[in-house]
Image (tube, rainbow over all chains, first blue to last red; front, side, top):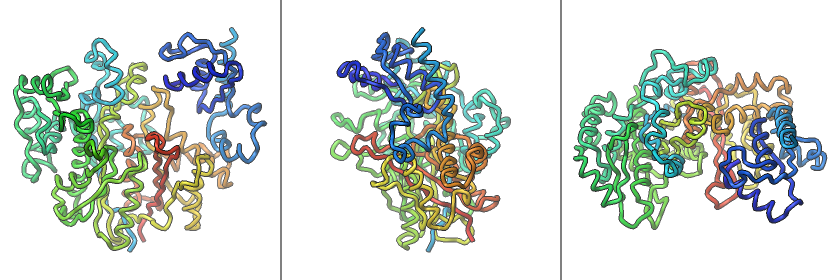
Length: 105
Length: 479
């Protein structure tokens, strides 16, 4: 996650506290894992504003059923379905599961 | 009168010493204690850049399918017997490019070291297309090192240091109090002009090419905004390049649309020809110095050479139908309109389904699609993914949505109608254009019937609209 995006996430988390959920639209397993880790346990590269800042935010990916079920079907079709078909959905969600597992250990 | 694309040239200038002047390295190296040594182990020599398979594809010596079969990582598997010149252009060595820069500088702002200038002149004078007798401006004499140092220390000239740290020259600002004419900005503009000029001279040197004096209009779609403090993007690189290349009866203008610029420019050139306004129009662009080394941190992290060490340029000749050259279909231009929105499905339908449908065609009637062709070896180490592959998969997914193929056939669609990314990350030029040389050959001498070129532009980066941009063009076999 870029330094500016980290700063933006930190600002929103500071302003809204526990009401914040992070929704990812990352295109592969590696970036999913890295971004999830960044907003949960802190910036793994120790370069940005979230270095050493474990926000512990709930993090979901837009491909997850919990998210998909809350979006009107036609909106999901127009906005997300094409990308879901073209990307490796299973690998992305596996990356997210891995990040969650790491965060709880 | 339907327009055709008669020819295209695609050139690279190897510029490892300029990597430190790229926007990202320039900013990051300020935070490093020993900036010269920091990049040194990762900067390639010309032999490595010339033998780099994606660069050989760029100038037309290696086919896109050959690249797909080439061993990876490409930077560890050079092309055997790689040549500087190819059917589409060349890969110019840096010591020669320095001479080209100086010969393109009409205001004596770039001063080269005396020895550097002598070496550059000797090399450039023997160039087969822009040699001593080609009518181009001469490479001026260099100056003594203490003169260069004085310009740097007292007149805010930007130093140009060689890969090894040697002082090669310096670029003076064009004005003492104009942020749009600093040495850095002018170096970027000059690099853009020089690479575009090289591409244009290649185009004009082709057998049967239009005479320089018959070119009536030049459209530049390069990335640099040439101007002054009262008009930052005033222009006009097109006319500057036309002048340098001897197109004495031409005029021109610059077209801007971020990385979508070349598609707009080709469309406009086609429209000029179709309307009868001009018979011979050239679309061209030079390289982006600011983008050199853009992803260098990823390359350092992965202990690989900085492959973003080349400036790119291209020039295309759009002309009246000659009965043989591939046709630019103005009746099926795909447009991302203001109302198209940003939803992926709507965008791809606007750029592909709608224009193809107008001709009664589908995605399966296009042999090859040329999209953003960024070299994944430049982007993946920096976490930016494989841009062409992702875009080809999205396109294939559209074919699934339209029930043209099964989901299981996405991979085959990508392999046969797409191609691996091979362009340096030079923004506008990476945007579909690098395949044009291969396409013109395939559509005239090969087996291709129809190709489609799609450019996209991130307009939101300029902070004046949240919109992106996109244009697609069909280029097909004549007759």
